[in-house]
Image (cartoon, rainbow, N blue to C red):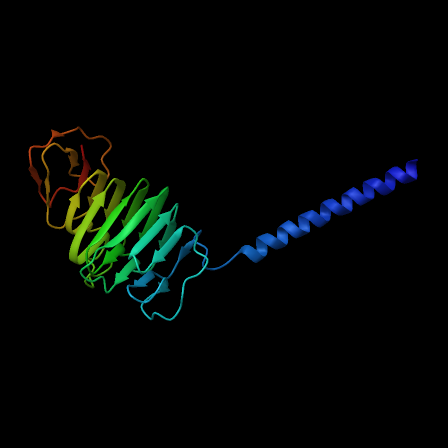
Length: 243
């Protein structure tokens, strides 16, 4: 009886060790340098018209793989973010090249964050940000302007930035948003060391908004429902809520 119990215990111990070895092996194999859990040194580049591919940097030869929470559909010009997190020391976090006249659409699901040493998100043309999720776009550091506006959260050089039914937080060492901007629905928080907006912003009638002259206010008071008020570009922190 004692011998039988000893064999059974030994067998259970062996099976337990085998399970641990298998699990550990799966974890090791699953690790990939392209996984978006750490700070990387490259940016994500989408060349519109080149297929459903996300590239590293400007060379358009090295494809980024195994990034969870991000997909690009070239035919519909739609980027979908689903609890996506990306942090890079590169000067542009997410860059849309050859945007063209048709807007690029960014759909938000869950909580999403893009952070870079220059512009977190940049497009040459128009783009629309929408969805039931949120996006935090942070551009930090002291990066010279190369068309994308230096250290900014969201930037466009030849288009409009439209936010619809989404929650967006855009932060930049220079500006939170660079370019023409409109809020159709949802809410935004924008901050920048040289002003929240690069060119100011006119708050539509009926919108609520808050402002501060510091980029990290400890508390702010509601200004009230706007009657088409223009926020000067020198204001460093702004929160706007559509009705």
